[in-house]
Length: 79
Image 1 (spheres, rainbow, N blue to C red):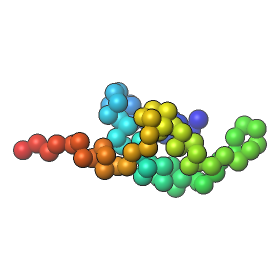
Image 2: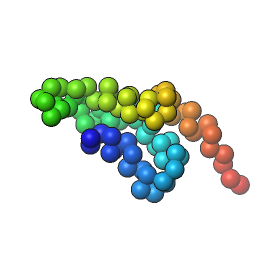
Image 3: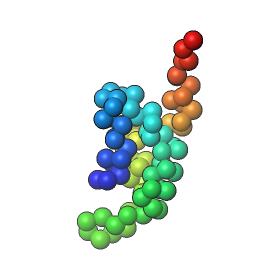
């Protein structure tokens, strides 16, 4: 649950789909591993790869795992 909460923390200041641009991408998966470690122990005592949890979260929300550039390419600078 902490990993899922971490991915969606940005809803606190952007309560629509755009919050996903901050962590819902392949680089977010690597960041989750750095923060939470390579694996966590679930309530049954089994080790579960953080990468698996992170990728599943993103796939459930977006249907695929984009790269950060997919999000950034849509940002248009203002003058």
